[in-house]
Length: 81
Length: 384
Image 1 (cartoon, rainbow over the protein chains, first blue to last red):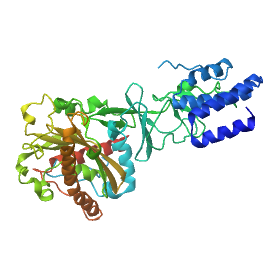
Image 2: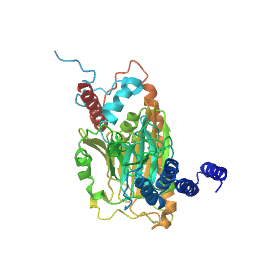
Image 3: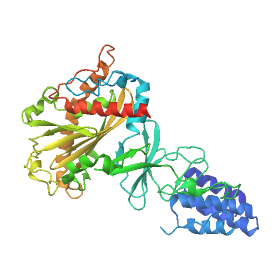
Image 4: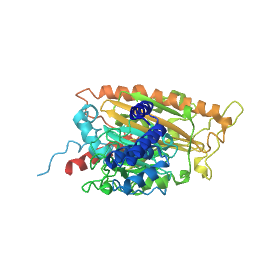
């Protein structure tokens, strides 16, 4: 997705406090940066996707945390309960 | 050399004692002292379980200026935390809401579980780096405030030094053990609050004595005479009044609320109204109960949070909706009749020549018991 388009969608999602959209678009931004081997930027976006998933109790929190941990950027958390 | 105690006359026996001095009602410095030595040092009521009925429910409470957060976790347990992020001290939750997964600080997004554990520290090690060797998550959970839920009242001991709730209040737990059973909140009509221009202690004092009933609540005289009441005094713990002629409310068809099961004959026509020090007022009757948490706003203002409870849930007894509303109105009328008294005593406490007053040795024992307890807490605080 075009970066300016993604930025626009993220701003809209923030304005709506739409956590599902925030998780989706930050993950998308992270995927694109990861594909470009820009690990720092990818982990920045992954962090945001993870935080909103964690806050809302979304199941994506587990895999997002695992991705950050795989990069050495987060402690692996237990989501079993 | 003995240090003179300005509270020594309060600590005398009821027949010769004076009440607490005016400063305890009008002086902000004494109010601050009471906050520490009386309200933070003991088990104070701050809310009700019914306000966080479901998992993830969170309710912020201002307790004498201290921000608290009441949370019901995934196990259904109620916890109370200081509502302050361990990072930069930001208020975490400013309005009651449902927490879906974690409590996220709105400033830098540090996240906490419903049990207060620090779960995420985004960018703490730099952009995209969510750990730092000097930031130990296990040391930075939310500050948990000691809490205990009894009769749906959420009690906290802020300074953490009071005896365990079950020990501190063992006498009342034993006295009312027959009522140690589930209570069901009566719903929207069973919840009301009164904002009163009075010091919180005057609400306690008025509640725990029956002396005023025939004068302030003349409507009670026809069936609940002064001589049908008795004083309740447990030095150092609680005081109140009991009645021997409790009469159940009935609707137009003669129906009454269901009784709490298993009560002894004592409660057929008996009821008790007890101030559990410092700031919780409780009432038990065969068919309903109530709890009042006094929120001390400042030395001159108090909010009375009043909640009514029943033996059966509103879902199980929709036929009693009208009766519950009538009962709530009845109690609201009684409590509103007391407002001019507690506000009048507050005004009277600005009379600089008032000496704290004298007690009726026969009728004012419960009030003196409370003054004695408050004075003891103040003296203990001054001795530390």
